[in-house]
Length: 197
Image 1 (cartoon, rainbow, N blue to C red):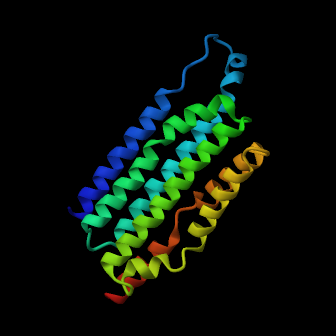
Image 2: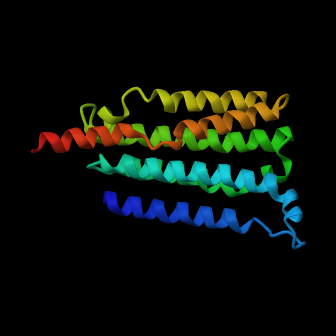
């Protein structure tokens, strides 16, 4: 499969996941702004989940810009990532009305952790296909932010039974850390284009 087909398929799946997630939101019965108040937790979880999906979409796009070869292993790694991302609507729908309950908070974290691990596997599968001296390997480097994100998810899941609000705070902190697009790939692409002139 070509890189462009992999990217197009992944874009389609992420778009469907976002659509499913927004369809789980229901408008209030009343017609005043006051009637929106009970929806605030659900809307907040939707916003956080949308941001996470947008972060994955954005970084997935950047990742594939420095990929020259897509192997069968990479296809399976990509499918593994899409599996975890597809669980986001269910986890978000459960967390929305239960943001202070430990089990939904922890399960939401498990989906985030699974997605993060799957993305890590995809990155390293692609690096193996491109080679250790590839543009992708240069762009990823030590991936400190990615590794710290996984640690944050683990901590959030561990503290959820006692301090679910701390877990929510950690999820938000990771989203904020990734909100600015990953510039590592852009730097490699910029230096490559300068070198070709």
